[in-house]
Image (tube, rainbow, N blue to C red; front, side, top):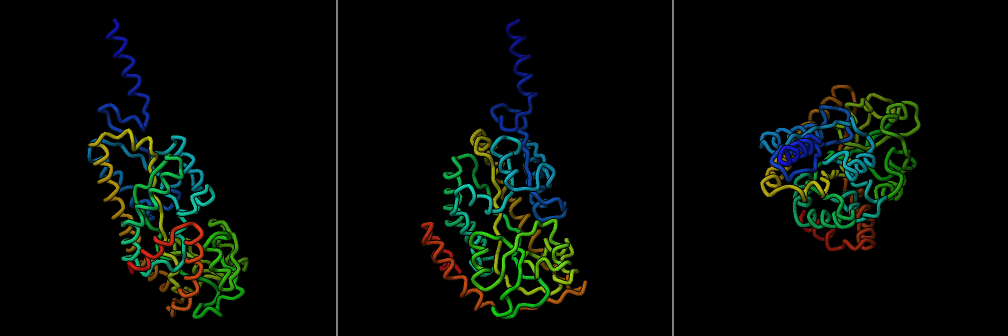
Length: 331
């Protein structure tokens, strides 16, 4: 009878479906989420590859959510910490409000020359150092599993930008605090807060004169079809970084075999997400041109020079002068 009761209890525990329970031989259920509701987004491509490779190992069952358990990044991180999700993809911005200022290193404008430079940095020693800081300052609640991207951001607005003088006085939808906001203020623009879902209307009704984002994100929203979005100037000011986070309690409960399989899935998913983004950039740029948008290139040198002093001051303030130097030297 005792053996029978023990068997019933063990069966009940397995049936609870706890995603972080990796101590048994059962398949580990993981909930992975991002905030983009567009199921053709690079985020979704990466998450689906993560699911495919992890599930094929026979060790995991990954459940992917594309904005269905939250479109607010703070909400996703809260779910991660409390156990409502096991893996989330978020931007660095939310961390600065929680005291992890060092992550803003990847928000500094004109920090990277191209994607090759960006990959070399985030996949190298600097990326590892920042990941270690995030792990420690989060109270060891979550860790960076990989760095993904949301593309290179450009200006788009009611008129083209060819010089610093062209920016002065323009109301631009962008961050209104932090290093991004500081840069736009320093070159004479007026950072303005507008919710992403409301930006099409804001561009159409002159609430803002323009915005900044990557082709795969603002073209599907048809911002380029508004009167204040038809001119796209390839400022290339921000090679964006996104953080694939895994809850630490889940990570620590993995067996060595599970951890190896998970790392392999993350590696392949990272490659898939980045490649999907790179492919979509040229695709959506051509769509913008076909739709009548006017694209121009410009001499970015004056814009880059303006950013260097902001980078220097910020790095000194947070104690990352060595990391900044390393990034510059790796160009």
